[in-house]
Amino acid sequence: LDVLHRFQRKDIHVIRSGHHLKKSRITRGELQAALEHCEFHLSFQPKIRFSDYSLVGFEALLRWQHPEYGEIFPGDFVPSLIYHDLIDEVTLDMVEQASRLVAQWREQGLKTKVAINLSSKSFNDVDFFKKLQQRMAIYNATAKQITFEVTETEVIQDISKALAVLNNMKLAGFQLSLDDYGIGESSLNRLTQIPFSELKLDQSLVKGVSNHPYLQAAVESTIGMCRKIGVRVVAEGVESFRDWSYLAELGCDICQGYLVSQPLAESEVVSWYQSHLADISKKLP
Ligand code: C2E
Ligand code: MG
Ligand code: MG
Ligand code: MG
Image (cartoon, helix red, strand yellow):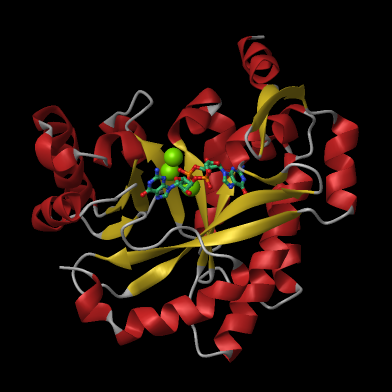
């Protein structure tokens, strides 16, 4: 019941259209039309290593190119996709798109991997993982090329269901990432229970970490703990050189944030990579 309430409340959204703000409830019909007209697409944000700036991969972030309102961000429609039970369909389409692009980029000289965000609602479908693999197979994508991110708060909602699916994925060779770490009720116990290879520090812990002792305490202990259990740490929302330097010094593994790059359109990815390689030493301290 609690879960339903949450979805219902979240289903009221504000759609940005130029300077206007329009309050709107997104209907199932609108979302289905958007699916039919292929209005959903991905943008790609690079993740690089603190140690040598090398590319780790890209996170795929969902966008809705609305014919009337323009580009809409996931916070404004993903809850509606979940509420109307359309998230599985969209996720499967995105996995197929990502698989196609990984193969295409490879031909263009960029060997990389893409991380897809999963909603824990998809774990309700016992065949979901099989369907994922079928979509990947269309473009011969492997478990090394596609990784998955799941938010901590969602996993905790139904830990046994989530564990069943995540363990299967792990067994099939997929790398799993615990997203938005730090805004839920984080615990070491949970981390060792779930087969994650990566933990993503939420932006709220990262932004301004270089001059907030409270954030520093949280980030430092998380990095220390992850090192002990062999989980790599991604800092999300790195916007400043100061935060970069602080996190690099602490031994944080991977950086994702506007300092490195904003999310890129699919057509920009290869050229971003080429210029990143070219000025790797100039770009960051
Ligand atoms: P997330 O997975 O934690 O993704 C990171 C979000 O932080 C992205 O916002 C990204 O653009 C933003 N970001 C990255 N670096 C910076 C920075 O330096 N500064 C600031 N201010 N923001 C930064 P976005 O694209 O709006 O996505 C928001 C959330 O929507 C994602 O959070 C994820 O939970 C969800 N989402 C995105 N795509 C999908 C999807 O395909 N499926 C599902 N289920 N959820 C998705
Ligand atoms: Mg994510
Ligand atoms: Mg995140
Ligand atoms: Mg986040």
